[in-house]
Image (tube, rainbow, N blue to C red; front, side, top):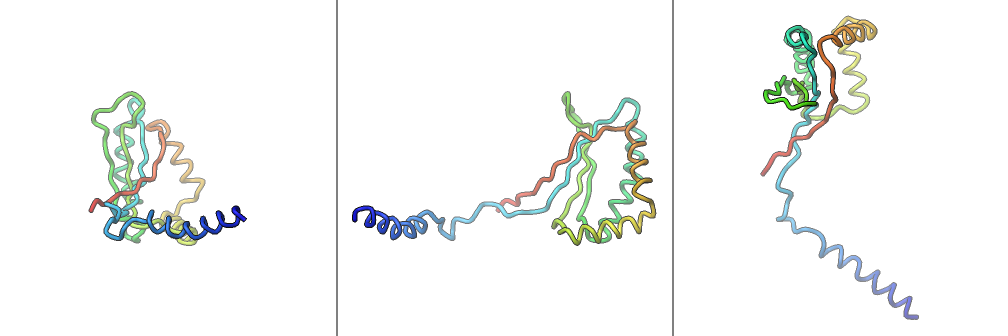
Length: 149
């Protein structure tokens, strides 16, 4: 009988405990979610910096402007690491998104990109491999801005 009473007391107390643990509506989180930033770290090879930045200023910029014109991205930046420490990237390629596409949107965007690009996947891969002598991709992170209130 005491086990049944204990269980009943716990069952009655649980909703009260949950209510007490809930924050008051006035205690909102002090920040709202903002844009997503896709950040890729690039290490430049010796003698490859000029050629790679030239590629960024032409081909990469055209691709970003196309994506921006379609509303897929809200902006992009190239950031230089001016006080680089050992093991850190020389450049950061940043692409900003207001929203991330779902799977079907991604497929439609990929098709529109390849139609616009008028290059095969194989050709784009070959061009990417050609940039190996200029740079090494160190990794990519997806960050989300926090808009402080």
